[in-house]
Image (cartoon, rainbow over all chains, first blue to last red; front, top):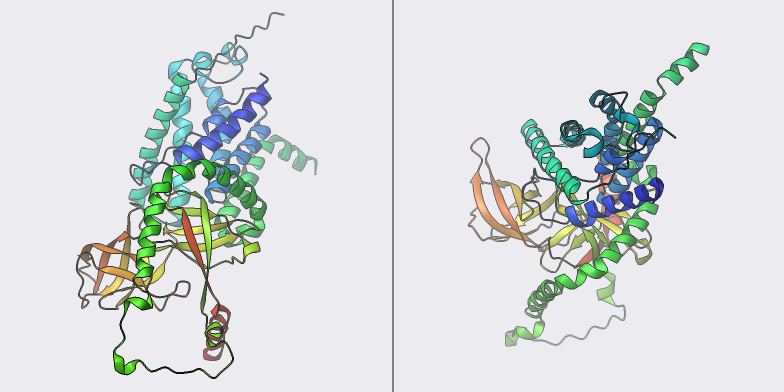
Length: 177
Length: 284
């Protein structure tokens, strides 16, 4: 399956999963809102251009916004995540070796610890920005702190479960042709 | 000039980031103009369509609840039937109406449209429902929405076939309500915590309230007919600093299982709004 087709299918599945499964569940608590859809951005290949990455994330966020009737909220958070992503990858990856051997970020291509850091930082950024925007409209500081920590915890857990359930086979790409 | 182009080229990613952020935040903070700003009507049609396909399957799992709600509502309506009441003999005078004009039609104040819910969620701070009735069927913005057992919300967006309802479970939603027993008026709000409970504020401490009392929509409300169930009092807490109660209400409507709603149109709304506008103008 080509990268393009695979990512289109992922896009649709992540949005539908968020709208019709995660969002239909009665919440455990007002703070515990599970987010998984931005894993789409985290899984995009290394080679994608930074502009394209941001435009794609904007599209992803806005699509979700149309379903959840929150204009621009998720779009803003997704654009932030996609802007930070390349910096983070540069920081966490040894430059010469792994960068070109695998196509996209995963446990195999980065290793457990760097990949977990990558997920935690971006999940935290996404949720912090999202809840911050919500806080600007209503709510108080306690609400902000509680919701950011709870959503980040649940989000990280969900992403790690997804990684274990849907194990992505990464092909080792040699450059010795 | 060359430097400007170099600057743009060098920081193109950052500039794109800023532009996208500004677009997103513009959508977010100009919520009322969102409808025009972001092709929301087209999007409503598409998301509504997808929602109704999903609902086609999901619907069957809630049939038992829907049926129970409808039976309860029927019972309520049946108990209002005229034949259940006996008039005292002296008042039973037959009067023949000699006016040929249909006098009932003329004074009809509210009209009802039945609508099926095709999408809903209760897990965020501002919750919405999507219903399969739109502008083509006469739905307009700011109409009230009630369920079989109580109030549900208010229409905020309309496309041709679908409409978006802001539910009572939304921190932006406010409506006037009154106690059934005393008649004191207050404001109903949601604090964002639990989908089963809402709050009634501004009830004076002189009011006699008990747990289990009913709360109904008030005559002061501009979107609902009066005397529609809002909820029942679950907890009473007196605010020490002010002179008001804050009452915790159990919502009459179960937002998890509701399937059908009625959209209430106020036929005299135009007139009422015009009068209020005119009053404002003359008093300024």
